[in-house]
Length: 278
Image (spheres, rainbow, N blue to C red):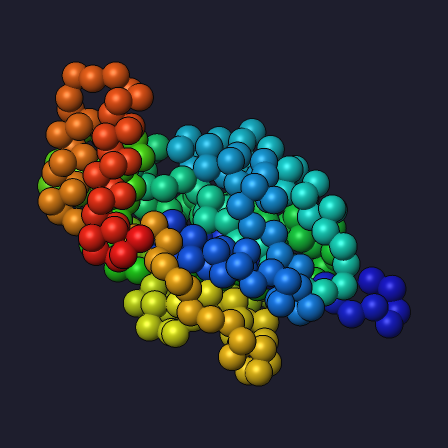
């Protein structure tokens, strides 16, 4: 690092899935003009293709895919200007959304080994691009196992053709997911890196929702925070048990995919309007 040049700060919100990540990214997108005075932000497709490769690594771990991930993540970081803190938020950076399916050693019912290997690759990439003095913060949002599994089921029953009931889906998770324990393991393996965690329940209690986490990490002045309104609506709210049963019936029905998609959309829209007013 050249004399007089401050270490580059890189903040990576790398997951986990179903822990308010969409809400955090929505706040960044909504308030980007206000927040870009303090940091440069990269969310969603702006980080591609690295998150997609990380997701593939989560589904079937092998050295080649991990090497591809590290290469593409390094290439992405090289496009980020030095100076203001770099904030990256993309939940696929921890691997794939857990399904509770698959055979050993590719059973997708926990993150531990996958997210650790990906975190180590991310740190190597940052140091390769910005030097060993880079100030790296890895951020993980977490929640309890039961809440994760229920939210994941809602995702799959809504967005895919999953055709098993919740009890069957839940039984696929034979081990504890333990998101906090996973983050603790990453912190222990990377002692020179700052690892921060926050629970979804605590984040949801903030007036500005889960996005408060990023505001706190960046130490955004309070007068600026006061100008950031609470989200007008919840991003991708969960679905009720009654709606889940209706979606499951549609997934099992013998019908064209386009008709099923339209019918599911109508049911989801009706519940959101009834429960949330939009």
